[in-house]
Image (cartoon, rainbow, N blue to C red; front, side, top):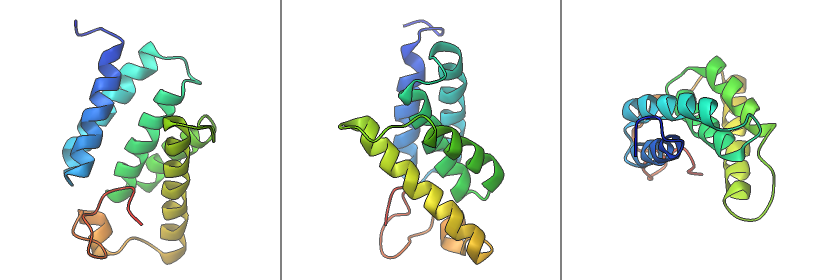
Length: 131
């Protein structure tokens, strides 16, 4: 595949998810930003895969304290992800959870230390989609 291949954005989005699962939110942010940029160039604005990448990136930014940018991406994703069967439906549910965390964070006045740094949270690795 060449550097301009349209599938590269999707591959990078999946790599970003791997970094999230490993708790490396710095690497996840870098890779997801590149995926997002590539998908903006190669996918239509209403493509759910583009919205899913925006949601995951928004979750990473939320965990790193960049709430305003996270909100923008999560709201973008919410307007495009649909509650249908399969992966898109799972992405829509995960985005709702992320938006809920953002709202909770705003009500509490900010995240506790463990949510900001990626430490263990409630006995689980601090993944973006944990309960």
